[in-house]
Image (cartoon, rainbow, N blue to C red; front, side, top):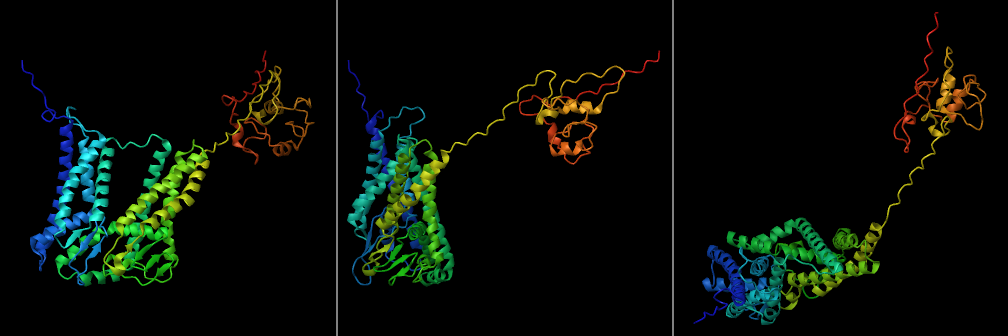
Length: 525
């Protein structure tokens, strides 16, 4: 009897899953390259003076695609005949390739609806997607060597694999649910890093936009000088849009303190401009500061890294209420180091050479901006984290509740502020006699049992007797609450307090006022 052996490739085994992931990576590279080739070809067709033919447009598209991955290009068609490097990456162009790799790696680990399709391991998915992408990239590197924008092999061997593997790893991390490290301090530090990085980028973008609006006339003159026909103007506008994230990073580097270089020997910082800048005519570069000495307006940009460090430290401090001070400081310091590393990478991508000679250094210096970010986070973020932690650990002291007064004995008068609230037992009037209102008031307000002053005699100046003319003034001075049935009346005296009739905290409710005794009808018999 013959048994049929099931081959894993036929029934979708793990090898087929890895092969599918590799194909996904190659397709992602092709989509990004094709989109950029369509854009360049459309610009070449619409140009009134096309040059180089379709081959030149395809070589330009290949060079821009490699530049979007951080690969330096070497221009061979220069006026001097010497090759000139080009290393400033339009960071907006990097969004599409990075997103395509991210999506390919994420979709690789997404199971089908029936859950039958096998999946590779996370590391296998990263390796397969990145491998397929880099195979296409290697072909593009070889193709670019025969064009006017050849790829630099050193940066192609360093930056290109780092960007692809990083984007693929981010896609796998997303497919797994974005898990954070098991240690709580590390997870909080990563969240604080993201908050600080977003604050720095947003603040740098606002600073760059304000400077560009302030130098709008110079930017318009530069735009009109390099763009003649409408097709050239559209190309310049697209290039300006692609470089907007670079300007945000430049603004953040300027606020951090190190600033950026404008050629060899020229440095722009909030303190002023040092040296002679070599700035080519370009609309965005017209927004660069040109004052030899910085003013308070330039120094105000230091609020950007200050706010980023405060938000970063506050994020750590809010989550560290139950931690020790040592763990809180270490988490804030870790967030500062992680944010500094991210800013250093962004600064390296936002700057680079624009040519030879004085233009060989242009933009932020990555290690200076990274070190400045760490210093801001350590000097501001760590104290803020400790302060927020200490403030969150405060335990509000509860207010002491008033102690309930002992219940009076039956038939005894009640002394103190609650005297008018608990009526005392008074003997009923004799049959046929009229009730004494002073005696009723004394029974409601209560007299001091130690004085043993009979009610109604008027011998006690503070008591409610009817014989003393100054009894009303004495009671007002003593702040004795009045009863609704007092002889002075609730509205006849200026010292009347309506809150005197509210029950105390230990009483269930306001007592009902005593009912005055009604004299019996006269005997007519």
